Image 1 (cartoon, rainbow, N blue to C red):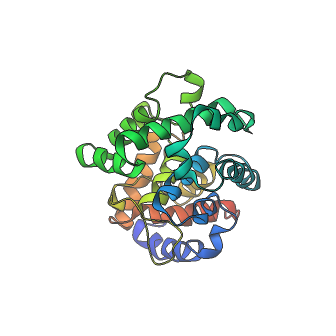
Image 2 (cartoon, rainbow, N blue to C red; image 1 turned 60 degrees about the vertical axis):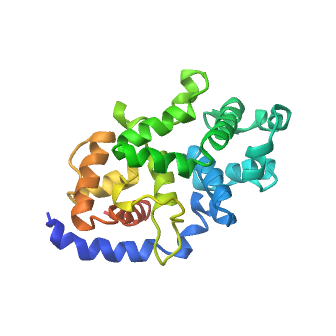
Length: 254
């Protein structure tokens, strides 16, 4: 088993390989890349992240349906939509995410924009006062501020309840970190050093093979263990290694 010091050149090279514009086209991040306005980016990114499980072509197809229903102006839609404007989403389905879920999230975003100005402003305020896991917990509470079914709340995990929060961590990476490659957006003024690595079956398998992760369950404790090791490789931008782990995983690296 290689030491972290020995792993770093290999992982840095893989970050360069997978953190590239070519990565965007077939990845869910391609949906927010359709936009240039920060509010459009964060709204489209959030909704896309919420349905980012399953086959990527299906994710992209269904995320595009959501954008089309908002006439590719998500911020304007969120600001001005009336209940009647949301009826079109009632027929939306992506795996277990259905039309009721879509309407609830749209109304929730509307409340967040009216009360906080944007998701970025909300998260910035929370992260200044609390640890990042606590900030995520309270961000989730804002999303589910309106009464809803427990089934809908399962779409967003809670780190304080030991959920890996993969989709939310991916969304946070998109919004917070940035570099010259231009894949992630960096539109939220929050330090990327605070981020935690998204963990799924692909990145978890690779992380365990490399000795970056020993915990067997893909839960928040595993996220903390993995991210702690990634911070030893780059304390300022640990989650850049998500590109290496995920890229190696989906390419079938052994």
